[in-house]
Image (cartoon, rainbow, N blue to C red):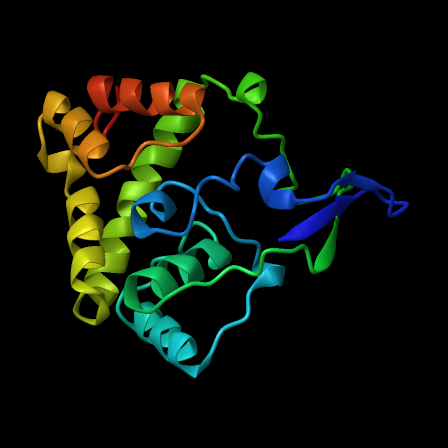
Length: 193
């Protein structure tokens, strides 16, 4: 985790994860498939993770993951384990030129933006397919089942998709974003609405 500060290093929030509404997301594979809960600058990995990372790039045929830190978290959780340090160990400087930046994840800030959510949802499904195809043999059995079932969501009927994501805990924690996700599942496919 990190502490969010402004350009003068004044504290905006004591925890990036809490501020962005991700502190409740956890680090289980079913939650990580839909939500990135790590920041690249806070990651520490070992040689086994590095080896799996290289293997994943060899196995995805030019695919570029949505975010490097998210990809590492998915690999660590599905093939090994991910541990959190329960305190903020660095400052995350928020300013007008941040590429991504820290965004409040409060319920009131949750957006029902179907176009943006639609693209992100199906991008997450695509990312899961690439993860499964690249590292399926290296994954824990239970992680493989979740990743594989999420990757196969396009194969289900729209009603079965809703039941499937509920059964496997694949809905976002923010109720407004979870509603957006359910609308996407019920009204769209990877090809469009």
